[in-house]
Image (cartoon, rainbow, N blue to C red):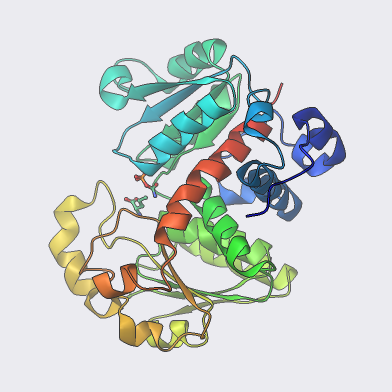
Length: 331
Ligand code: CP
Ligand code: NVA
């Protein structure tokens, strides 16, 4: 990559980008909290930091001396490391808090936790079982709250995914995105971000594992508004036909371990393998939010193929999360 000659100051960047500036003090609980312009502003800021157009030294001026609370009711590799490394690179520090420690709603109420926490820290990120927990944290918070995955959404993942697709193709409008598998959190955030950015989205899920009705309605409406399409099918082959991206996620999400066997049966025809990838476009890439269960939702051959962008995608969690924290947490 050629060295970037002009290093931009963070303050100048904010002054030059009203959509980025408008995010200060806001929450990110679901993908629909951001307008199309705001999504593009987050992605642009992430790209500027990743490429060094805003240098690592300058990035230390984004959130100097700020603290991020990272609340985890479930395990994590990418989310924890991207937020914790990210806040450090922006001049602040992270504070890892497990559910065993604060016991949300057990040791004390969400109301009390939110009030106490957000009087001390500058940003809170929470990975929770129920969307209502992160929504309640935000409702009572005095500082921005970021959803680090819940039962209904994973907006930070979707931003990193589209950053990856932008790097791959430049213009993303008009591309075809095929999601194969469980229509839950990751899928629902992707449906919304793709519809907002004019990306055609085809979701292939077995009966009983469709996205929620309200997300189906939202994605269809947003797709109409942005000149694209949203489709739901039970056929992975139909979804993958002509796709620019084939994406999958685990069949058994965290907290559903007891359903693993029944899910393996329901999703048996939904494995992403070489034959399915062959139905896609010649420039098609494979993506997965990870962690992957190799041999279940995807074969080793696809995970490790030249079309796979899984590790670029994982790295982009760092750049996307820095952009989210930097813009929402800006004073
Ligand atoms: N993709 C993702 O959120 O990974 P982690 O569960 O490891 O954070
Ligand atoms: N759907 C998965 C995503 C993990 C990042 C889960 O909720 O476990």
